[in-house]
Image (tube, rainbow, N blue to C red; front, side):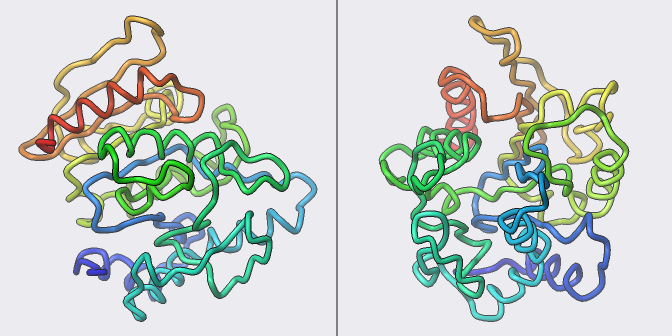
Length: 265
């Protein structure tokens, strides 16, 4: 695995210099991938402050230090051990943001079934449509071909109404994290955050943030909420759409077709 200079610089500077909890989560997946997906926030629940929440939120907040370990050990996908819900052991030292929850099944997670979230199931479907025949049909392995981050570092099991904590986190992350060269260089960026970008929510100027120009909107003939807003500049493409958890196959197919045409697949 070759970690780019820009990614190493980002991890090292945030790991050593940044002490803001809003900047402790950089992302997961392949930092050398062509596709960056930015969601709303991690779907973790603080209800009853359960052991499960504290454990997984701890890993969420250790993201930069875990990436520093990946870089130091030059970890590749084959080096990562099976980890997570279907091995039931949760060996903390084996967790890696390069390939989190390795070998989770491509089914919706229910208690004890070793499955994944609805969002990750959709990510798996999208990346498999972009790269047909490469991904597993049974397991979640889209991390090999995409890098995943979140607009906000504040976890919620379901996206909340506008609130100060999320607003502050997004303000800090759009100012200090996503402006870094690492995030600016992806050929394809998907902001799957729906109305979070709007003025009535968190007012994110995607054109200014990623130095791109709005081109047009691709409307859906089947569902008015499944529009795709397209931004471009040179060899870079940004697609803004709804959250990819409760979305149709039609939206995933349209996103994949636009991406495949852009990167000449």
